[in-house]
Length: 334
Picture 1: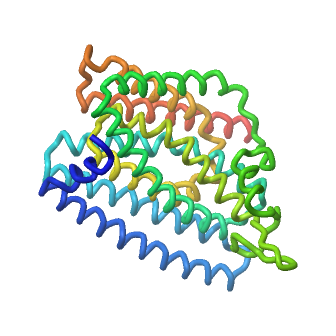
Picture 2 (picture 1 turned 120 degrees about the horizontal axis):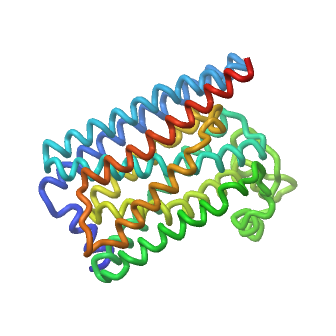
């Protein structure tokens, strides 16, 4: 079965058709309101210089709560419409995507810091980058589902990929270097073959014309790296969700809810990302769990609820340990 037939399956059920309509309405209204509020905040920041970080944090806090609340409401709608199991699958997929995406934020923070892109402009990069990444992810998800349905052995390939990713992260975890070489990034090197690159800002513009030549600004460089990073990240996170379910509707909706909430979560956590001391270990444990789960398909059946409990438990435990260590360090510095 190919990607086109997967799209037919997604919309073929009456329940799924209704859920798709509800999903699109919720996402559309939320994005429209979010974008409108952002424009108001941007105008306020221009009038009150120096308050950009405070205003962005407030906006991020509000929208982090809104996106999580919307995902929770949608999970409730799924529960009422198609039952407990599908709702649990949605929540599990959402938690996997959300937790794994936090690690991706470290790269965003490094890129924005290196390119000296202010808070006000970071929002635009993430808005454009995340919206375009959604289209890419839908294609990857449908392709992944098609592979699983046509070639059963792919479930073991995906499982092996997740195990490899976890082991690679474990090997590299103590080699993490808090700097980034932008000019050596493969995405930037490819972009230079198309456009001349200017490592300078020109407001929030992605391109600027100088002496009749169109140059890509630091904003465009950041956007390209964000897109490339998300592509690499998707190759890890999508198989992780497919280890839980191959239902295209569940995988796509949980993915999109988590991704759209990523922008606000980034601004909320930007000032405290270095406090997540043990998060990396938690993400490795999650990848190991879903990788083993996928590899043992056909031999051992893991209940959906058990998977949710294990993933949520790992995430809560590692974040709790990080919080304890942060408090201990603060006490030592007082």
